[in-house]
Length: 256
Image (cartoon, rainbow, N blue to C red; front, side, top):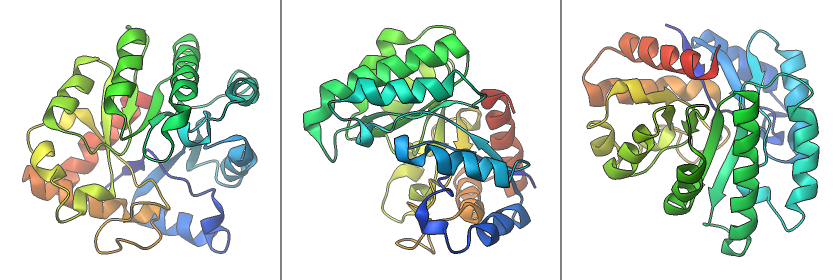
């Protein structure tokens, strides 16, 4: 079986002690590609270093995470743009809207989100969207900018059937499923049951949101198989089929 972890932050300090072993475990578990979403200006070098160290497995993205957007967002994006337009990235990410931690930056977040969407369209690469407590706000931005050039993934999808249908209506978007799918009372299983497999890719969001039985611990890319197993159970299909479909979806979306 071949899997793609479409969203993993293995470049962060949580893996400084055993990064090589973590990558090895992922490869041994059948996760051949690890897609690395940038976070902010401080993480850029770490992302590039990982790609340099593991060129067969790691593929970088470039973007500014909404939780890192501040009042000097234009200066931040100037640096992001410098990288984005000077080398190859698989996507613009991770970008989006997060009103869970700080609602005061909502206006800055919307502007930074919109600007980065425009760059993705210009470069003809997908966007990777982070949404937390902000589906309506994120939809509002994407609704305005969506056209045939825009593709991407709503990463760590935890929404309703209606929100899933809104995403599907864009035409070029997938939903990223991670550890939350395995949480006992998340209710996500009931939503996912009603959505066709054509709309899903798999992810871990390591080191966050580790799946059951590792919930609350550090997540890593090899744990993607637990998400795949849960999806197979929900859909009542073999895990091999989950691997085949989600990998194909990721390859088509990201042009791998």
